[in-house]
Image 1: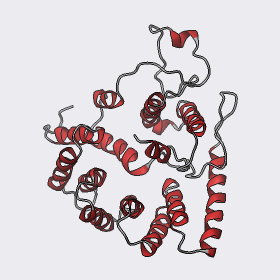
Image 2: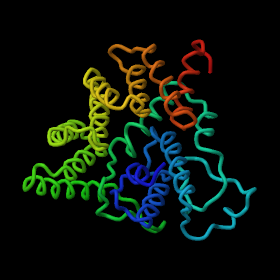
Image 3: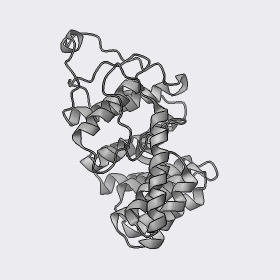
Length: 300
């Protein structure tokens, strides 16, 4: 991932410092491995924690000194998602994608997980991470991660952005940020509203406008407004036919929509991901979908 993509993935502002990235990574690593994660989402939380560890390792992030147990390559590393994680220490790990592909996930389960990565950013139901970090996450194991602080920070940031937009309704940076904040908070209708306003102000094919169209599709898909989601993704592909993320999203939409699944269409778009972005993790994940769709029913 590029630095800008990492900041967005972690729910941080574009100008977040390396120290803020490190604090966010360690806070999330601690929380995702804690007993406060609901039982029903612990498998997802464990996979999400592995992804954040990959990001942290790629950035060379270390927090504190490794324990004797961590320094011993033969020591057993806790993998249970309920285990309280130690401070992150850099160590060799198998590539994340390989670990995902080796896990016994069905097509639907893998699709939901990857959909969360590609479509949803860093979230799960009931917990909201703010786009703009106005409350620093905890940086030590003695402090607890308080999602309510992030919710309060998000609400405060929205109020600030609303004031900015009341004074200047054409402030594209504020329009983009408030819409993104609602996306991260799963407030899909509000996100669509503000992204639509952004496109009215800036109907160009700028990166932010393309991003807005992608997120409008994402939000509509989450609302089960499948026709609207497909229309948004189609607009993106008309502007940028080689947009691999949108091809993946369109394939995901066609495969998993409940009203009229279109597996042939999904195959076409996932094949296009592989064609336009060969060798990328997204292409490899699309290939997993294609391989599993070809397996006979009942094949593990």
